[in-house]
Image (cartoon, rainbow over all chains, first blue to last red; front, side, top):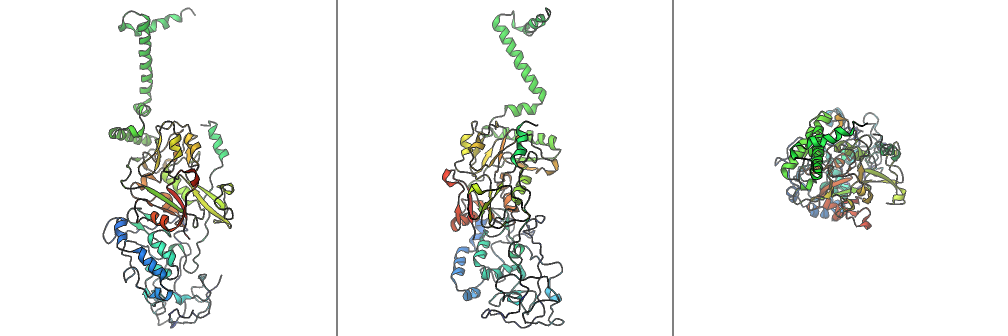
Length: 241
Length: 315
């Protein structure tokens, strides 16, 4: 259980730390996957083309295979600079829709506090005390710290290793930088939960809907009740009814 | 004592009025006539629906009109039983589709959400309890060895250290031993690969249960108890419509959902995304990606049941 730790950034990450006071994002502790009361997210927004889209048609525009292979083969530094696999804006043209990121109530936009004027940016890695002290960072090496992912200049954005700023709604691109194999599986629908139609439009979840980005390990669950033992059924066999 | 034989002997004669004087042939005919009339009368007394129920043929021999009649009859029965409108569909297999299922053993945590979502979706009897999915807790050290399987585990939290979990349900075999065993042809494999049961034709002999190596078939030992408020009114004739006592039932890949393009209930509920479903004939489907890229095995492959249900390791 490491609290946010002070060591400097890993060299070569290409992230320039310019200033910061506190970290910004807080994720809800109960996530959508773990909570049985909260069902899958069904997005009401229509697909750009309207109506359910057959998977064949939607997938054909994106050579997931080739790109996945290409991404896997590229060295990490090049990989980050490779053009994003889905349009420059990070939207997924093949009809994959994702729900909103699971922010804690009232936490977003981050610029409502981190406006760069009343709160100056403090780039020094340190344990957080004034705010966001509920965040336990348990993700990767101990040197990891807020500004590896959160952008210091534009607090409502995340940034990739390349420096490209991205919205929280496409945070899977950020996760995919390290977890390329999961990202590839997720895009084809094999990693993570899918709801909707097996032959039409599917609802995806963001990585952060199931994995708290600060502590991504999937949380244990209470199992639902076990089946009755057969002796209970034996009573029925005797012709009780 | 002496009076008793008289009315008995006079009865056939009275019934035989139109047949002429009573030779031995005619009296037998008369007797049979009255007997048939009495049985028919008794059946009519039970209500017309029950007669049709009794005389109905195997589902596969029914004409379109007869299926429509059957559905109307069932919907009437369910309305009377549950006090709710129940829709009974009979969507046929989709052309060019064979359903396949894959379950990720490296991700399943044994939370049993699927078991209970299945019960809610498919109108299983709550008491006596019937569940179509059985989650086995297995030892990591032993691997998939059923001698070390426990389905009654109930710790405060799953997954438990040193264990992995393997949900087992109908494997929708390409060579289903249950179909082979059924003496009356009440269960068969549909064109889209789903093995279904005609609940009206099933005689409850349970040979199929003995034949199934996966324990995937379940028998209604008692009158199924299903509270009306828990009834799922969207049903399929060969799937989740409420069942009578004395018939066998099984997983149908949620036939009422999947034939309309939706995912099965267990796929949609799984919090870990371990369950993958799709069309085996579509090379772009998730299921095909799993089969072509992951380490996949079939459960009890040596029995040559050729399941369309696969287990795989996602990591």
